[in-house]
Amino acid sequence: MMATSILSKAGTRPRTVLLTSMFLAMFLSMWISNVAAPVLCFSIIQPMLRNLPSDSDMSKALILGIALASNIGGAASPISSPQNIIALQNMRPQPSWGTWFFIALPVCIISILLIWLLLLITFKPGRGIKIAPLRPMKDKLNGVQYFIICVTIATIVLWCVSHQLEHVFGDMGVIAIIPLVLFFGTGILTKEDFNNFLWTIIILAAGGLSLGKAVSSSGLLSTIAKSITTSVAGASLYTVLVIFCALVLVVATFISHTVAALIILPLVASVGQSMDEPHPNLLVMGTVLMASAAMGLPTSGFPNMTAIMMEVPETGQRYLKVHHFLTRGIPSSIIAFAVIISVGYGLMLAAGL
Image (cartoon, rainbow, N blue to C red; front, side):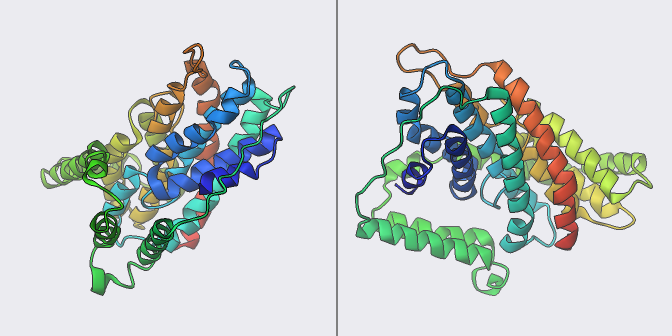
């Protein structure tokens, strides 16, 4: 309801609709993960797509824009993607939510604005296109919806101040149990909802943490870290950040963002700790931001996978082809890389990482 209301206010200008859709995808990714956000956004824009020609550049720009923005949004908050959870596990001390937002939000917003300009230049979606406006849902919020909003806001606030309340709740994961108990206990969520959770992602993240512990305790991580530390000996912090960001960009483009984070982040933390001036948290933060921004292939992340599967209902023809990701996704990744090693680096230093 809220997402539809926002898009209904975007008007009918293609460039405004595209930008609004991208920022909506980023915002939703912050809170419901960048796995669920693109699916929700694609369902919302279906009426818009039906009123556009199937081969319209606007349709392609809209679908690809949502996918790219969802990837970027995967870095926006600690809970927006599994790789962020992995990053937090490799950061000592863990940054607060406020610190994460201070660094990630400007990086995400600037990246999305630049990617939006890229899509406008390459697709030219405004040519001869008339956008059918979305009608906002006029149903009033009921008591259950108000309850969900209150619980959600309270949970987010508790997460933001989790470090100050660590003596009360302990780990941040304990706070996540509160909405689970309230929603399942009141019957808002059912056992069907529980069974439909994306357990594969949870198991992947947990398995990755186990893999990280095994690599560390076996001494393999130390051996690899010593080798890399020797090769970057004498290099500045900025140079090491650029090297790791470039490395994770390449790896995460060909394998999933999460798996790339599982492999590389423990190594980054170890190398950062062994530097003459240790900055492991800065290197981990920069690397995980870059992992989410690897989006040069249809298989680079779940948002891309969802976008490539979008089809014209009448013909079954897909809106996007692989070359759309190669020609827009790779430049978008390079744009995000440039933002992270410039704006992001400055913000991380300012935050004291």
